[in-house]
Image 1 (cartoon, rainbow, N blue to C red):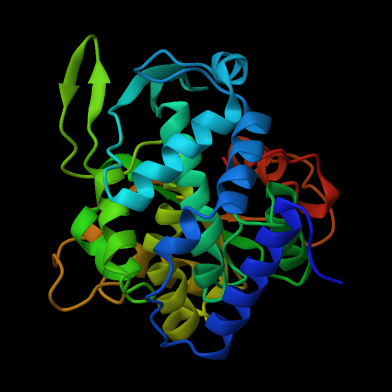
Image 2: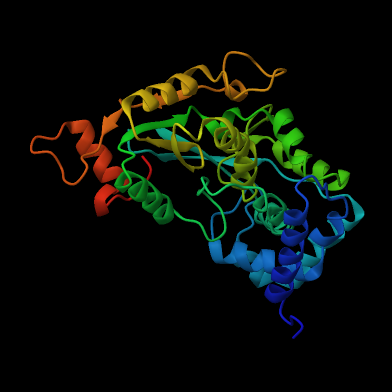
Amino acid sequence: MRPNTPTDKVRELQRRLYVAAKRSSTRRFHALYDRIHRGDVLREAWRRVRSNGGAAGVDGESIRAIEESGVDAFLEGIQADLRAGTYRPSPVRRRYIPKADGKQRPLGIPTVRDRVAQMATKLVIEPLFEADFLPSSYGFRPKRSTTQALEAIREAGNRGHNFVLDADFKAYFDTIDQKKLMEMVGERISDRRVLKLLRKWLEAGVMEEGMVRNSVAGTPQGGVISPLLANVYLHYLDRIWAQRCKHLGVLVRYADDFVVMCGTESKVNEARRRGGQRARYRRSEWPLERLFGMGLHRLRKSVRYPAQATPRRPSVSRVRETRTHGLKGGAGNGLA
């Protein structure tokens, strides 16, 4: 039965792209741009952006305003600009949200127009990278969730991997090296128009207090395409761990947060050493001091989970870790 709705057609397109990418891990795809501005792809992109909601960008145009003025004309305008090569993204609007530690997390809010264009691009290119991503990665991926990440941690703990290395990257989204990121994207995509489109979003800049600041590094948190690009960047970490370090323990990564579940104290200390030095995680032409120019921001003490039950007098760190990760069926709700 042939797909009839835009959603069905997009799913069929994604399935074909995924199968083709899975069939050849070295294939680079060159005919993608025309698929991005297909009418059904843009329609599905609009549906998802509308479902996600969100505030207006720097142009002040909201989802409701677009619906009132006409969605068809709005999508036709994006399609015409993409087809003609005249599409230009707007700077993202900077907004800050409070974090649990009292600090503020910067978010970038693209215009609705740019969110639709990014979503259309994501729909087309995501299957290519999903074919490569490893099971250790859980964040911002189709059919993967925090619950699954927590379950993987719980299962590893129940198998005796009770020594835990917990870490994240400092200001990860703001410090991604854009040149290296595009090199990684280029391992799967050779379509120059798609690569140019991605660069436009990376270099669109940020508007804050009426001033536009050019972007020289990072990918704005809040952008539709940003989580996918962030996963492409850290896929190298997943790959190197699977190739060289998996004997040390089980890696579970959710975006820029990750834990390594180890069976012995010596293994968790070795994982900590490799995590700190990054000697096994870098390419020879990359900076020598840290992986991708970034370092570990937070390294908690190695903690040993009890084999069957919580100790009578648990340490504060053990209680925090147990609650955070939900080991032994606990009520964890995140990866720190």
